[in-house]
Length: 104
Image (cartoon, rainbow, N blue to C red; front, side):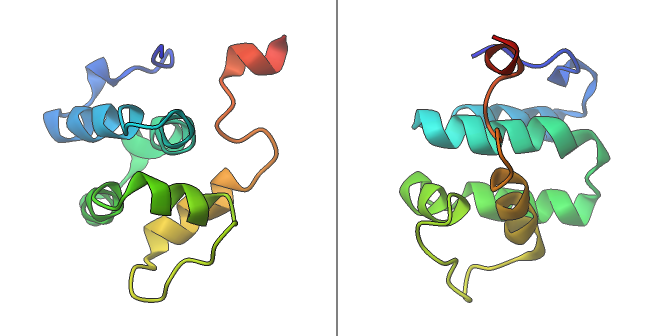
């Protein structure tokens, strides 16, 4: 999967590591949803938001995919503002679809 034009090269080491983790989840669906969300937002995240993102990235792909697609509700014990924000962005039409595919 190619990285967006605003690639991780200008990011801090922590942000580059999180960017990589978001794009290399293990399942294509999670790579697209989570990777796109992170690519769109990583540069603006605060340190506290980066902490929350790390927590989300520690969750299982199968669970994240179910929650972010709305097939299953997000359990209260794992709900965070970051996960809610991610779900909102991932629920938009075309979320996770690479830009090149949207133009085709």
